[in-house]
Length: 389
View 1 (cartoon, rainbow, N blue to C red):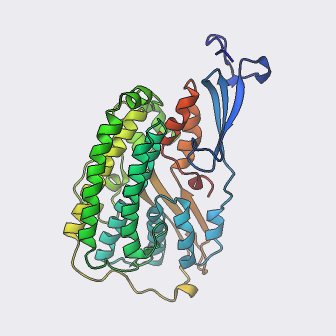
View 2 (cartoon, rainbow, N blue to C red):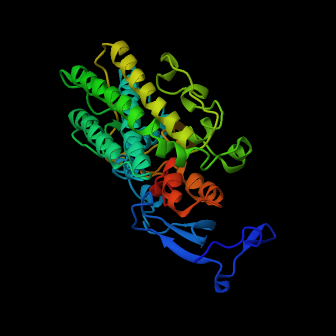
View 3 (spheres, helix red, strand yellow):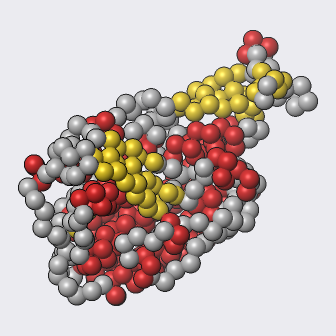
């Protein structure tokens, strides 16, 4: 089918495109929910004129997880097996926020060493999430080798998570009052070796991906997020920082021990797919530096957990709180309400993927080529379970 005349389609009425599929100018295709070009169990309804996208709608509803309602029907300690599944590649952010909310409502003070251990796991988790993401971003433009490299190195970090928690994917390491255990003997040495190998990987990715003429040609100028979109669409994290916004909760509202670490907020200028990828690559290097700072400055005290009451009959006083943290996708928040019973009264999870994968993607996709939808979607870094909570 030949591409339609750009001056004649689509007709705009009341701010919306009027598309007549019977006119033979347009065709509808579905991408997903099971498709290598979609970031998980969601589907894209795409209207094309030739190979150009004239309209796109995001469809969810393929997971039906209901995390928030499950949490409201479980005792507090039982919720930790649920929250980590809201974001599989980066579960520790959910563990921390759920624990931090409970601690604030219950009046629990976390030992100093536990704060350092929590920050360590959050930055390690940040690395694993970014390594999975950059492999997908490269593969979206035909460079699957980068994905093979990055997933292998992600596994090396998961090996370290297995050492400290017993689990590779879901760690359940952060719990109310602190963490479940201290670091095993020799952990710092093995961690440093993995960080050294990851640095070498990042140098190779810089050569193979960011200096690749095809990647530059296809990603530069694609999916530009303009500064006026950031607040209007609720864009956060690297997607906002690539547009020049100096926003990072680790700096703006410090939690744990981030106020004791030395780092700057990294920003971009071009705010396209290439710029967002480059910014995240820099943030991976930053996480490596933060992990080294944590290991070198961690207090020697061995107190890593505060004693708790019987967690199977734990009644937290009535109250409400909102806690937030900086995930790899931006602001992640938990709103928790308690009523004095053994279960939470209400839990609401604010995941960055909701706005990025729906409204932002739907806007940026217009007038792009169908072959670039995958790369554009990956550049926004979204996880469907955060949407279907």
